[in-house]
Length: 203
Image (cartoon, rainbow, N blue to C red; front, top):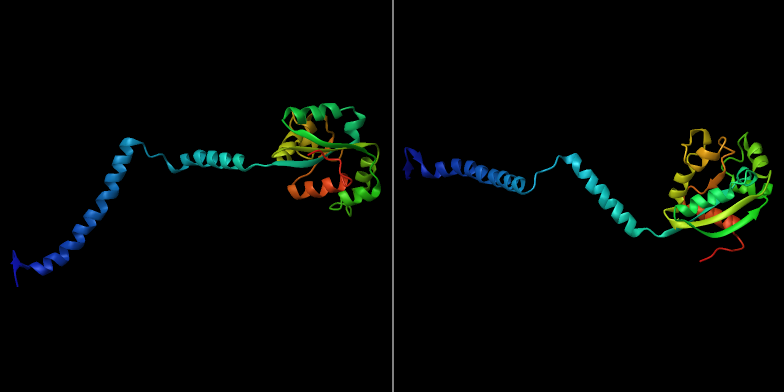
C-alpha cells in the first residue's frame, strides 16, 4: 500500500476529506455575507418589521372593498342638535350616506337590536333612553368604514373617550354616548337589514 510520510494514502484521504469538506462548506456562507455586507449593510432582525408592515398595508389597501355600516344617532344626539356635526365629521372623513331614516324606536325592535343585553338588569334604562325621542338611522359607506367610524366615535364609555372623538366631545357616559355603530361586518349586515328592511339604500 502506498504511503505518505508513513501514513497510508487511503487512510489519509479518509481523514482529510471530511476536514477539507468542512472548510469548503463553511467558507461560502462567510464570503457571501461579506459580499452582501459590502453592498448593503445587514440590518438587525427587528428593523425588518416596518417593511413587512408596509407591505401588509399596501396589500390590504389594494384588496379593500367599500363597506356599508349602520349608525344610529341616538336621542341625545338629536335633542342636542348634533346631527349636522356628526354627519359633517363622517363626510369629512370621506364616508358617504347610502340611506337615512328618522325613527321612533319601539320596544320590539329595541329588544331585537339589544338582544345581547336584553336580560341584563340595566336594560330597562337603555330601552327607556333609546325610546325617549327620535333617532336617525344612517347607512354609511366607505373603505374600512366599520373600523374607521368606531375610531371617529371613540370608546363606548364617553368618559374614557379622547377629546376630538365624537363621544369624547359630546357624550356623557356608556349609554348617553351620541351614536351607536355596528362593530363588525356581520353586525352591520344584520342591523342594516333590521333598520332598512324596506330598502331605501342608494347603490
